[in-house]
Length: 629
Ligand code: COA
Ligand code: AMP
Image 1 (spheres, rainbow, N blue to C red):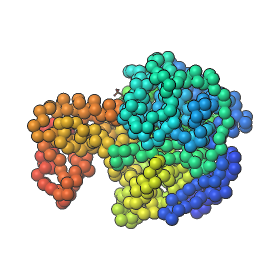
Image 2: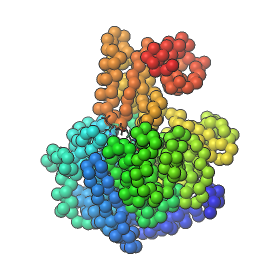
Image 3: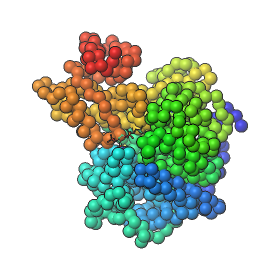
């Protein structure tokens, strides 16, 4: 099969193409309606099929002879723990955990927030919620209480599942005080919290509301899978947008299972029984799709890794895990590979391990820079496959189909559109751009299975945020171009989203925190290029008249505020005090000009600028501080 034949079939006969893929899963009732579209062209996939994602991912494999095969491999260098669950064991744990949640009153459609570190119980919790037909919303552990509180108020969970702590490289992070504070801040109060007590920290419990996980689990009975419709939500995952408030991306059960199962063979070229490792966190979309659901839907073993690419204990960590478990496909973010490259530029650690089972390395989450890509390919001798996707799609939009046809790799490109995605480059008037010309990367409707078609709790937000700018298309928020061979080059966000170590953050949200400082009159937060993390946020600040604070003291206080309000993963690193910000005559801050200036890129000063003298003023300030040459 060639890439082009596969892709064209998905375009010419989408219903036939995705019906065939859906047939590879075990439904309780196979969908009669494969695709429905509304007047705007928004697609609804497999809406009337009856199913349960946990059944497809677990029980199905046990019934079909995979009970004794490894399903989940837990490896935690930070706690010196290793544990493997077979499909039978994982299914049994999930069924009992679902029983525990049912005892707390969780039923189909209820929301359950999961705020946990990278331990098997986090995965078990997600699958247990899915088993009941309830909706999980996992919140990344690196988010601070106010961020968790916003998600609690939006998702209104009946139950929150958490753990006593997470273990980072240099410290143990107590989760329970963060959870308590978030619940204090939130208007909505969950009926119950269930806390998994880890040996490193015993969390204090609030009587009546909090329950000990192990005690409840010991008293619970296994429950079966609740049938849901293909259109019923499996989860809500919050992601940063252009406004301060995160958007709750809703993932439907049917399309999600079908697209993810398809991607495992087509893109990653893994078969049932293979070991697959996505070294992300269950708090991000990569973790949802490729640590939890896709590998299990495919009957693979998935690795759950509580550690980092470096320092746990060294830059050989990834290669050690790959060798120890016979990983066939490794998936991580460019930041992780850059960290390894920095510590081990010659690839000395790689030589210590037998990586013969590793067939390909996949990268996503941020732009894969060419030096890192070539280094990784050279030191490992493996194909390095970049692929581009978003929380909103749940799987790759562009990629190089390793299970269909391996196309030549072009550095800087995430190759070609995945089947089902009609990727086009448009200008702001919706005009298609010629090969090689940059523009907005837009996806023609309908989107393929797994992509969002609603934002939780806001009937208009999906259309307003994604569809209104270029009618008939989903606006990805990324800019880039397609070359004459059809290869897609994603160059970066064209909105206020920034990508710090593969973590998606909103500069608008960071700005709100900076602007909240009592000495700050106004500010602009922009992305500064960073050798390791891709980008880090930088604050350009104008002080209130009479404010006596020094730049260094202000920076210290802003770092603390941002850590407390958004979380340590923000990695806020630079504050520059300016006399004034460049603005248009209508008062809009020229963030793009500032961003280009700070990063030493070419910049244009729009004719609408209020006062041209401000630009040389800022350049001088940045030069004096050694931020630009
Ligand atoms: N819970 C609580 N805190 C967390 C956390 C979690 N789950 N994850 C990260 N943090 C904290 C870290 O402890 C750190 O805090 P500190 O500033 O007090 O030290 C901060 O958030 C930043 O963490 P991180 O971005 O991981 O930076 P680092 O310097 O500790 O490690 C790397 C650097 C390169 C090793 C790390 O960024 C990395 O592994 N990146 C790859 C990330 C990735 O896979 N992203 C893809 C998501 S799809
Ligand atoms: P998230 O929703 O957190 O997965 O972040 C999605 C964003 O990350 C995209 O809109 C891109 O800006 C960026 N991104 C993800 N993968 C890639 C990639 N392979 N190349 C370039 N940018 C990427």
